[in-house]
Image (tube, rainbow, N blue to C red; front, side, top):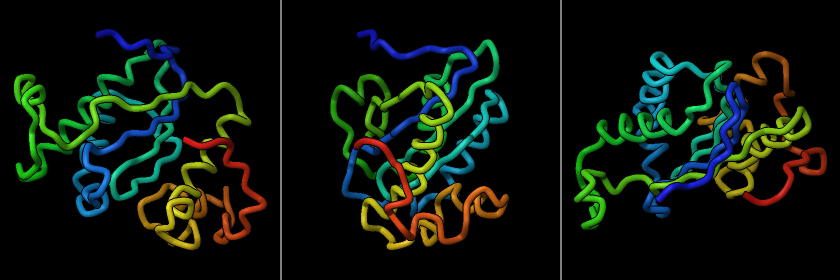
Length: 175
């Protein structure tokens, strides 16, 4: 089956990628494996990581692909496979996944959105950085350790207390 996806060479994309088991904390328990998988893929298939947050069972990211390149699907496939290889085999694998030699860790599909303009980018960056608060994991965005918010604060792009006053954040609609 073919899924229609936005394909813009050199585009900037927002992604939501989920684990198959939404009741686990696998991503934060194995954050080093996730980071290593992303860095391995970035070294072979470059992209700019604009923003990212890893939550227990899903992650959000914004990537900018190089000019002439729209292949984020291969990158996600490699990241998922690379991360999965770092884990012991303990998940339940359904027949359809077993036939395709897949593990049962990730949901097969993911959500992508092609960023349209600066305002769209700003709203999605805010959405990513505020997501741990939205999900009740912390009360302050800066308290979540697995977020690029800390890089934004270190570079002076956001204040250390960013997100403490929810009225100042425009995170757009639900995702």
